[in-house]
Structure formats: C-alpha cells, structure tokens
Length: 220
Ligand code: PMT
Image 1 (cartoon, rainbow, N blue to C red):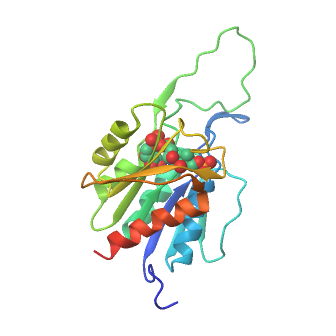
Image 2: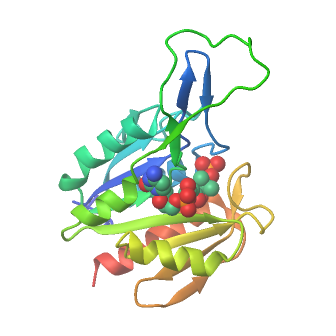
C-alpha cells in the first residue's frame, strides 16, 4: 500500500440520482445511473484512499469491499450524509445529480386520479455542494456541472459560487457524454482559470483522469 498516491487520505463521493417522493409509489428523479460516481470511488480506492460513497438509488453494486457505501433516497438524506462525513475527509467529489426541488408534501397514500388537472407544489432542496463549499477548511472540493447550453460560462459560475477547487463539465450536447452512457467527455475548469479538455473515454478512464488532477493538487 505504501507509495500509493492517496494513501492516508479520506475521500467523500456523492453519486447517482435522488428520488423525491410524491406519494408511496411515485417520485421525481433523473437519468443518473450512478456510474460516474462509482467509477470515481473505485479509482480513489485503487489510489489508496479510504472512500465513503454516498449514493442515491442505483442498481450498481459496491465496487470494492473497502469502500463504505451509504445508500440514500432523497436530496435531504444525501445532504445529511454528506454534511456529516465532510468534516472528516480530505477530498470531496460531488458527482450526484441532485434534484433541485422536492414535492412540498409527500402524500401518505397513493394519489387517486380523480381530477383532470393535478398541481404539484415543489420546494427547493438545499444545495449540498454549496453547503460543503461554505464549510470547507483545507479540503479539496470538486464538483460536476451537467449543462445543455452556455456550458463553460455556467460551469465557471458554479465553480466560483460553490467555492470549488475545480469543476468537471460534461455537456449533453456531446454524444456519449453525461448520463445514459458508459462513456463521458469532460472539460475541467480550475479555480485559477485554467481549462483542460479531455477526449471521449470510458467512465473508468474519465474517473482516473479526474483522480490524477486531484493527486496533482493534493501534492502542491
Ligand atoms: O450517474 P451517471 O449516469 O454516470 O451520470 C453522470 C452524471 C452526468 C450524473 C455526472 O457526470 C454529473 O454531471 N453529475 C452532476 C449532475 C448535476 O446535477 O449537475 P448540476 O450542474 O445540476 O450540479 C452542479 C453540482 O452541484 C454537482 O456537483 C451536483 O452534485 C451539485 N449539487 C447540485 C444540486 C444540489 N441540490 N446539491 C448538489 O450538491
């Protein structure tokens, strides 16, 4: 184990979608499979780190028995887990696709289809990554940005607003990028304004590229 680049480091990773309950059988969710976050967890573990993987609902199995996998459903549950573990880690990576809103009330019983129009009132979820950004001491904090337009500008805004060291941009305009694929195509925007562009690769290789950038920064 000695000589591994992230030995003695603790890494928190969020992954997957969140499910926001409408009633006992329905939810608001998104297309995240959890793959990107699970590959990051595997890569961080292979680099010698102690990994805590907080994941929303996914079909994926824990990539390695040494990884502490905490399964959650909703954004509020992910918030609780991530904020609890953050003070004890050296590095945090937010790869989860967190629902920005949740139903104001989750019905106790299955909602009946009695009316032609149904209104669902939504309230904003807390921003987990921004909360970690405020609590940040000497941790490295890495976020993702999933964009469909004005990609670099939006990602740069999130980098700054959430107090990140770098942000990983993936755009739904690149085929093979984002969710619903085994591959991803990323750009990394650093807080000093530097930008690195990467080729389309498997999510495993993308995770290794991201970990390499983290290792470079953690050796500074
Ligand atoms: O899971 P896969 O199928 O492999 O797909 C991977 C992915 C596309 C989900 C992943 O690569 C990715 O881009 N994850 C972030 C998706 C996202 O929700 O991005 P965003 O631009 O809405 O959010 C910006 C950042 O803030 C993200 O790091 C997100 O985790 C975080 N966030 C957002 C909202 C919120 N309430 N809390 C958060 O922590």
